Image (cartoon, rainbow, N blue to C red; front, side, top):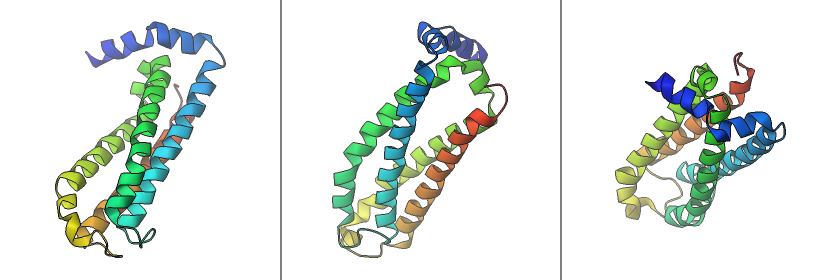
Length: 164
């Protein structure tokens, strides 16, 4: 069933356009890389605050409030451009080990974010202004940083695996 879906993606007009136009893939990929840079950079800024390494004089809520809109806009652009790139060789990308790892790490990063916002962040009033947040907060920040570094590493590795 998934194989049929990936073949359908591969056969869409969008995929054919990306494959037919020699400039389209590099331009879309460039926008994708820039968007990922903004996603990872903005998330890193928040994570470094959670770790007590950066912006220690700013409340965590302020850092998150100021940065989160940029993160979500950049993430949306990264998803749209990533999906466009994926369609161009969907069947091959679906079987690409680094691509599979990138997707797995993205899912885990999303779960980490949900747990942070639904559980850990609920007590933000107790540690919002503290230069050093409680251990669970720091663990969430460190985990997030490591996961996003992994997303970037495996994302970069995708094109170096045969078949794509």
